[in-house]
Image (cartoon, rainbow, N blue to C red; front, side):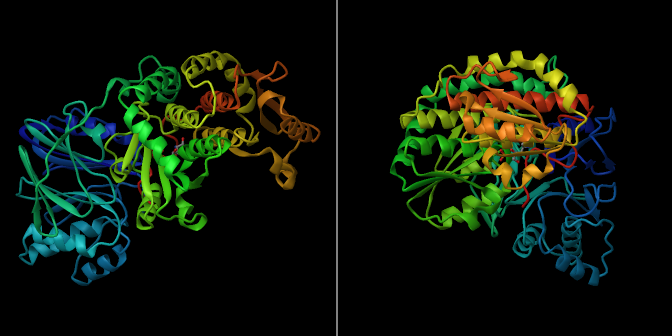
Amino acid sequence: MCGIIGINATEPYTSQELLSRLKKLEYRGYDSWGYWNGTQLVKKVGKIEVSDDQQAVNVAISHTRWATHGGVNEKNAHPHRAGKVTIVHNGIIDNWKELRTGLEAKGRGFRSETDSEAIAHYIDTALNEGKDILAIIKLLIEEIHGTFASLIMIDGDDTLYAMKRDSPLALGVCKDRMILGSDIYAFSDTTNEAIFFENDEYATIRPTGYTFYKNGEELVKEAKAFKWTTMEEDKQEYAHFMLKEIHEEPSVNQRLIDSLQTEQDVHFKELVDLIKNAKKTVFTAAGTAYHASLLGASFLHKCGVNAQAIIASEFENFITIDDETLVIAVSQSGETMDVIEALKYSKDKGATIASIVNVPYSTIERMSSLSLQILAGQEVAVASTKAFANQATVMLALAQEFGYANGLAGMPKKLAGVLAFEPELQKLAQELHEHRDLYVLGRGLGYPVAREIALKIKEISYVHAEGMMGGELKHGTIALIENGTPVISLVYNDDPKMRSSTQEVKARGARTIVIGTTPQAELNVPAESEAEFAILASTLGQLLAYYIALARNLPIDKPRNLAKSVTVL
Ligand code: M6R
């Protein structure tokens, strides 16, 4: 949550460059934004506007916000300025109240309700006391409890300062400039050389050089070359990134399947061996990635592998981890804080850590002893679509190694086939978009899919949708079914239990919509296995959610209150 960019360049540049880079990180938070270029402090509510302001500077910092402390307004937007210090911050300072009270006692007046402003006052106060900036940052890191990726500018000083704990921060190294950003999208169009900050590291950044420190000691850190494609960053002819990203599923799926047999082949086999040798395998993830994890656990379970999927935010409460456990984190961004916390806990218990990620060099990838990439390319829309299809496909590939036959090779073609349902789904969306509540039922592999479809509908169309186990319906939720309530049933191979759950709601007046694999289904998916059905029905659900949101005329790619990457607890 929140994106930050700072640039220190040999030649002056305008706010256009700064803000067009910030725009690449807008998916991390988009309720307000701002920048400081040494003379101008701009703060605005809403989406980033890249102005044609021609003022050129060598050093500037900027921020796009997802509010945690303090409402969405210009006052709380970053940067925050105190005396001669200006900062941007991504993260949460847990002891901000204590810091603020102490600083107020020294006469500091705060302007915002944010936790972040304390950083600016802390530094300015210490500078006024005659302390050295590096000593101040070292002490600040010791005194702050919480998470931060923060950039600091000081009036009259053309160095850019940066510090990080838990929130992501990377330095893009270019010939004529250094670009600090929350992730590699910030600079991947201009350099493939980066240095990733580790916890409690801080750095001084000059236009052609940098020095990293930890605990007052200088560190030797070399830039690493990274591989990343920028091809997918453009919306092309599509009205929304989400629709474009769903349409990319067949091609990115093929890319993934090919790579699991070629450049990722060694890692893939190593992961299979880790699963074979572990006493149990535990997937952990959040949101959509959790639904893919549930599919993975179920695929493996069908082959006799002891596998479970646990929601990352509740990890410690529902699972016992030891040194014979393999924990596999699944994350599109690789930066989800709940997942990072679950991994830290697992590491402390001695577990082996692996991951399945989309964004390379992300924190989760770097925390893992082994990582597979899903190669979905950048997902710009907040709603995860092609990443889910590829996460589920990695699960299929893993299960295949344990004897689960499931049509993996044909998946890209089948995904392309699902796109042909678009006109029908558009029509269905027209019928459904005015309903306030909707239910999605599934059993077995259909259960994670029911939850995934409901999540997609909720997050982009704001319709209350509940995805649940078909068998659980009669234990309470059926009380909510009224005349006309839409209920989507996921029925693989005419499963009699799902048929009767569907009949039960129909008998109470529900408008039932069967997504199945027989001609009786309203949407008949050409799937030859339950696993195939699960993945294809999910894509169908993504399209349905998209067209419901479209019919409701909503900001599909950037739904209210959300951010693509949830980097706070
Ligand atoms: O980046 P991650 O895969 O770790 O993100 C996890 C969830 O925040 C994410 O899947 C979220 O649920 C999506 N907005 C769903 O479309």
